[in-house]
Length: 228
Image (cartoon, rainbow, N blue to C red; front, side, top):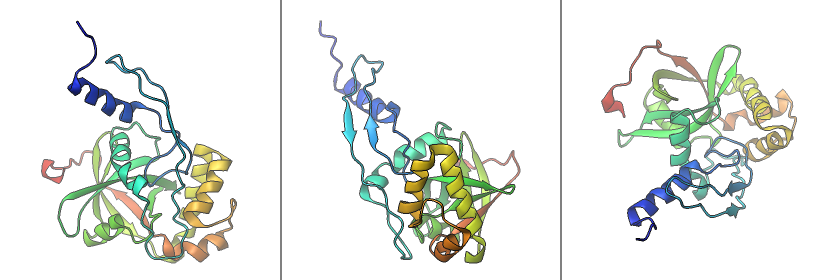
């Protein structure tokens, strides 16, 4: 009798390979650009995932425009970032932001980094006037943060004059998380800055990067099922 998995099992293997294979430090819209490498991994069904190396062109958010849409490959990986951040399998700074779409009313989710600064948490919009930024404004700041659970939050947009120190901390956190080389790439590709920018340098580009302060509801606040 053949032990080769059937079509259903093969689809399961392919799905598991996509989720379980290590992505070398990259998450859609959140982390420093690096080479994406899918390693050999033996799956429960007995098959091994193929080894692939894909040279990913770094996502560039450095243009001095109001909105800098992500590349197609970033958008296609969005589901994976949402899955892993929601399950708490991403680095601890990563969360999923959920907000209602301003035209459809449906919940929209995006993986994003949460930056801690002087006792508060913040979200930095790398793409500028992105869809999630416009949805948050339309929702009057009401949203949900997901990471091994869900919490209702209120997002307060900062004036451009208040953003520089938050963006500076975003870069510092990136260096602590990924190292100096990856942080230099973040500064260059995400903000169009030198590896060690001054506050003045960051102030000059802050208009292009909306920043939101997170205010959390009480710990036991539950997200209603219809909000999913």
